[in-house]
Image 1 (cartoon, helix red, strand yellow):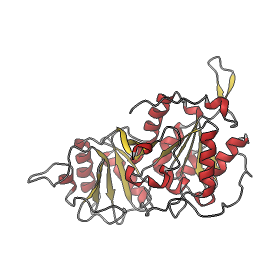
Image 2 (image 1 turned 90 degrees about the vertical axis):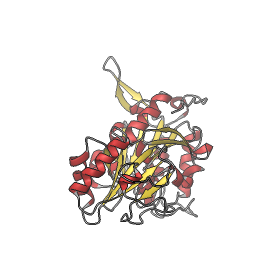
Image 3 (image 1 turned 45 degrees about the vertical axis):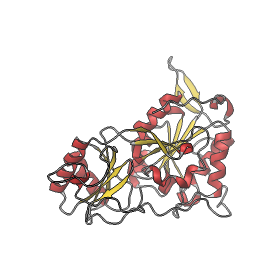
Image 4 (image 1 turned 90 degrees about the horizontal axis):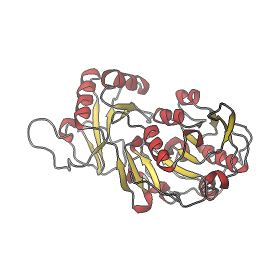
Length: 333
């Protein structure tokens, strides 16, 4: 990814956020002020109707003015990022596809870094899941769009791409290849099962093919999101932060589903939404209000007021007026 130079003054000097406590090299306590906010979108920053509330828009803008960088870190592909494109200030970057792509929203969603799922690993995953979960179907998310198997359900608000068996979509198998650009890297493999419980399917996928890829999920249905080995929201966020000189303890992260767990564990301060998956609720340092109640904005307001992290009672109540940017339902991704 292209390194980004930030010309602004140090966020630590500009932001009135409440410091967290760390440990110096000599073992003495030291304070660490947040410099970067990393937030998931669906079920977290966005309301259930896939809009950004006026309260959240104002909070994001105030954070940037105060010197806090904001990164959107999502399972969404770049083409679904219009709903938040106007609310990325400064660096303009967003982490998409669960860490497989970094895109510049200021340059028309240009992909500036890719961490692909290698074709041999993708094919090994397809083979393992076909053998372990009868009835599974697949979609292949490439940098240029999504392609489906004939039996894959219409879960995503996208134009129909190439329809073919997953092996063909990945450029393998006998016979002619489908008419798609095989030079486009594979960002994610999606695996859907019509009957299994979502968490059971995730556990099964990791058991039979975890050596080949990173498995996670964010949908309410049994839909696995499969990335390259070592690729996650956390690992790509860590790379972006390192390029900016931001340490994990200077990051405040928000999420609601299993695909957020690594990021929430990496960040120095983490918030589960009140509507989060039970595993997320038990894994974070704090819990904020639900996405419907603008829980991310609530915490940002607290940071900017200097209120100690984790203290209740910040909520300013529901926002008024229309929300910003409706988009089609992305099926939980």
